[in-house]
Amino acid sequence: MSKSFWIALIAAFVVINEILVDWVLAVLVGDYGVAEGVSEVTRYLTVDSLLFAAGFRAVPYGALLLVGLTSRLKHSVPGKLALWLALLAIAVIHFWGYWAMQYSFYTPDYTSSTSSLELIFVPIHALWIGAITGGIGFVLATFGIRSLKRLN
Figure (spheres, rainbow, N blue to C red):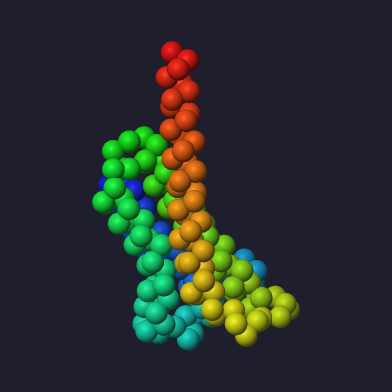
């Protein structure tokens, strides 16, 4: 597996978080400027809260890291495709889940009192959706390669 996958995995874990999504929402939905959005988003930010959320976010990324390091997927084209698709699914689910969690902060919509629980449940959903996406990608790539070999 190339270094680009591992760099992308670490970058996705670090960059795609509730703080970035909150800032994007502040700028795009809340009509804040770039600097105002940073001030708004980091107003109550502490290192403890950042590490708390990162601990939950680490579960699907850590699982993918372990699968990538310990399995033979990194040695085959279908396996590499499965790992990349799983990473993409995990990153997209995190972004979408945090967007849904915080969207009502910048609109007149009602914010549920339990919306902060999504910090726990978004990574759980990202884990199983990433696993299913990677598995489907692996199966489809394997059958596609076999079909192409039969044609030759």
